Image (cartoon, rainbow, N blue to C red; front, side, top):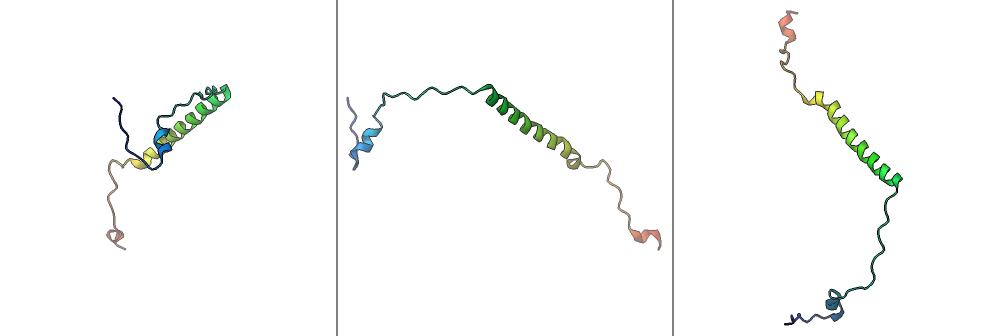
Length: 78
């Protein structure tokens, strides 16, 4: 039971998805120790920067427990 394909103006494009290459890509080369250490160091630096920014910014995000009562200068009597 063969599937019939719709006719297309460019037949070579329709055949392109059925083409299989017998050429295998070369194996991926392994990262060296220096590359791996650099990636870890970069990731650690980014995480430390985010944590440090969060720690430094926490006081500005918190609200004071009892805000001081507003006082006008007119109440001083001058």
